[in-house]
Image (cartoon, rainbow over the protein chains, first blue to last red):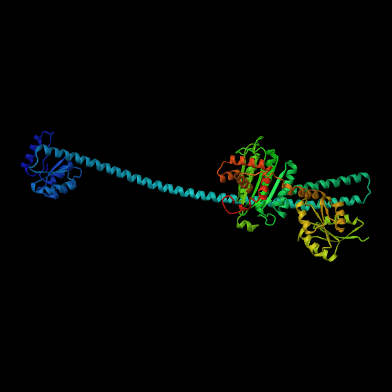
Length: 397
Length: 225
């Protein structure tokens, strides 16, 4: 109790003790300065504060008290004339105000108890708020940290993806060059075999014939000559065949249409399966880009090889069509077909057939096209290779 | 008897020698000159006016095909017998167009070449028998693929399926275009093939072409791509 009037203090003390609402233990001081010192040193439940003190008066009293003991519940006591001041005190964080002489003991006691509880509640709320704020600040910090971590990761990921894409492009480029180089090399060897070795062998054969004409020779020599001629014949056939298999000169000289015709004829004869070849789209007059011709020729070769190996087909269609925006090659057979896994119908070829399909796909992809394979066991298989013809491709032709 | 005057055009010296020996053994022939390129063959032919030029196909500085065409165009009296390692009837058509009188395979150079030269001089044509057979076979089987098909009428739906397949779409694409399952398309296909008596996809295409069903297809659009 901060009260400089002993009579007022006694009156208040008495009315409170008589209210019968629990025990109150009073410590009375007369100045604000003393009150604040004591409040710092000891623990009180509540301060009852008279506003008019020897060392302070009016609003200054509660402002100072509030500032110096922020967590102490304070109930202000005012005179009748100062009710407005009491209200102001409440607005400044004082828990309650009592008007001297107007309140009964029980009322005052209740007011004091409420004041204590209110202050406790306020303090708890403040603590909770502070904790919440801290928590939320921590959370915010965490979010900021995670966000920056994530964005760093994201950047790394993007860089990685870009790198991969570049690597994939480079890889694609290399594979394309490789495939090109392989075809060029095959073509070179094929021509070399055909032109050089073929010529040499022809010369050899002519020489042998000439020699024979200069006879007659003893029978043994004649027989020997005939044998050598036959050997030269066989060699010529083998070389020719080898050259054609490596890379048919007709593909470079005459284009895909005729090369396919030739290949399907040969295939049909060897496999004993009739081939219906249909080509369309002015392929003679407007040659396809060389890369496309090679790709489609090799795909046809691969597809027909698969058919011969696994399909037991009765009939095969080979279709080559040049459309406005693409050129397509279709190889369709009426054989055993295969399942979606790419294994052929009856005698499942371990890997080989599958490899063939992958090889085709790779070739077509490298040329920028798409390969579609449709098949079901028992109903044949369709291989569709499509290569896009853009302006550039058309010009390259 | 006047001997046939012959010019040998081949970039391979040993081969020319062999040919010269071969022809020297013929009583009715004499080799008047040799050339090692298509260009030289043209020059020598203009200068020597041989009766027959024996021409290799793969030569530097203008190949045999071009040289044959130019030579026959400028000097129609000079005959050309092509001697080649290309056992491919594809070249045959081109050479016939260019005006060659003979097509002899190198591996049967000896007697066949002699015979071809004599025939060329008599305005006849000699074709290597294996190639002649193949060319003839194509003539017989090629266009005849336009087999008679029964004139069964197709339903609109069947016609649509046939058009899509003949255009070159996969069953799945055709199915997507018609909003049906790929299995349905397969069923349609079987029915179409049975109705029309077609044996393969190629015959299906030829049928659709003949009916003019693909004419309006080569236009931009999701399906006609």
